Length: 623
Image (cartoon, rainbow, N blue to C red):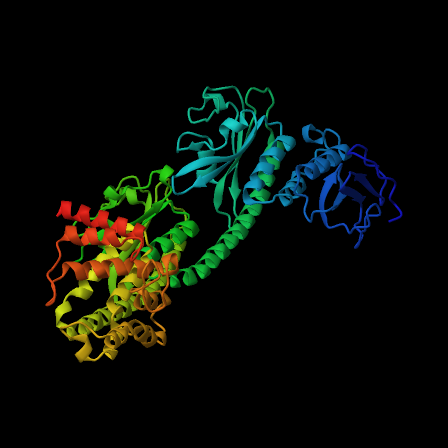
C-alpha cells in the first residue's frame, strides 16, 4: 500500500500516469482506487480501514486500469459512484470518446465495464444507450426489444435527442429501420435515413441523419432486439469504427441482459413457488367453495402476470355459472355479462369440459371459438371434487399476448390441483356438516315428539331465530350456533318423565323444579361433545333467563345473559303464544307481539323485542 499519495474531499483530482502506483479519489463515504499494471490480491482502505469490496477493469490510453471501490455498499449502485467512475476514466483518457486517431479506446472493454455496473435487466440497456453516445458520434441511441406477443419492436431505453419521447414506443413492421436489423440479424447502416420511408423519427418528421443498427443477441445467438445509433440533425458520420464499437457494445449488452433475465426469471419462479407454498395452508382454513376459488384465483393472477381471471361453477346438468371474477378493473377485464356462459357452455369453458384437461389459447383473438374479443391470451383448467368436474378456472390477458404460455400452464395446473384438494376437503366437511345438521334437527324433532302438543315447534323457532339473528346483523358463525341451539334447546327434557312432561294440569312446585332442571341437564349432556360450541350450550342453558334477573337456572340479568340466548328466548315465547295447546288457544299475532312489548325490559331484552316486532309486522304486510 506504499503507493498511496493522498485523499481529498470531493471528486476532483487527476490520475497520475506513473506505473505500478495506487491512487484514489476520496469522498465523504466512498473511495475509488486506481491501480495500474497489476492488481494486489488484498487491499484495505487506509482512510476508514475497510476492505475494498468491488472492482472492475477498463483501459485508458491503451494502459490497463483497475477501478476499486471502498464504501458502505457492496456494489456501486448509486449515481454518485457511477459519476465518480466516469470522472476518473475521463481524466485518465481525455476526450477519448470523440477521438478519431490511433488512441481511440477499445469499446469492448468499455462495454463490459459499464454492463457490469448494471443492477437489473432494464438497467443494462439504460447504461448501454448512454455509453453508445460516448463511444460513437451519434446524437441518439436506442434499444428496441422484440415483443413476440404483439409482434412489435418496443423502445425500452433511449438516450440523446428526444429520448424521453421515444421510450415506450411500439413500432410495427415497416415502421422502423430496426426491423431490417432484427429480420437479418446483421449490422445495417443507412447514410441518409431521411430518404427511407420506413425510417422512424421520434419527432414525427424526417430529419437529416445517418442510421446505424446492430442486433442484440443472446448467448445462443438468437436476436433479442436492436441497438441503434443515429446522427439526427448532426453533420457527423458514423464510420466503421463506430459500427465496430456499437457491435461490441450490443454483444456485451445482449449477454448481460440474458443473464440478468435468467436471474430475474429465477427470482420470479422462486416467488411463485413461495406464494404457492403459502396458498395451501390459506386454502385449508376456508370451507366455502366460493371463498376457496376467489383466494386461489387472486394468487394465480398475482404469480402468473395475467390481468384477469374467472371461475365457473358446473352443476349436475352441465350448466356453467360465473361464480368469481377477479382482475385489474382499470385495465377493462371482461364483464360478468360478457363471461356468462350459455347452456350448454361454449368457447374455452366448453373445450375444457369436452376434453377434461387444461387448455391454452395463446392468440385468443384469432381463435375460432373466441367469445370475448378483448382478450389476447386465455388459459383454463377443470376443477374437480370427488372425481367430478365441478368448475373451470380461467386466466385472461387483456393487454397483450402472454409471452410464456408454457410456464402458465404449469402454474395453472399446480393451482388447480390445490383447489381440487381444498374443494375435496371442503366437500367432506360440508357432508359432515350436513349430516350433523340433519342429526341435530332430527334429535330436536324426536324430543318434541314426546310432547305431542309441540309438533313443528323446533322448525318454527329455528326459522324465527335465524330471521331475527340476521336482522340484528349477527355473523354466519353466530347464526349457525343459533340454529344448533334452536335444535337442541329442549334436549334436557329427556330426563323429565312423561308423567310430568305430558301432564295436562298445572305442575306442582316439585314438578316445576324438575321441569326447570332440563336446561342444566341439557348443558351437562352437551358439555363433553367437542363438536358443540359453547355458544350453543349457552342457548340451551340460558334461554329461560329473564332480563330482570328472575329467570332460571342462574338468575342472570341484562347483558349478562348471552346474546344468542336472549334472541332465542324471544322467539321461543312468541311461538308458544301463537301456537295452539290443549290448555289454551293460539293467540293472534297482534296480541302476541303486544305481549312481547309488555314484557320488554322485564322478561326480554327491549332492543331485541323492538327489532323482532318490527320484523314480524313487516313480514305480515309483505305476506
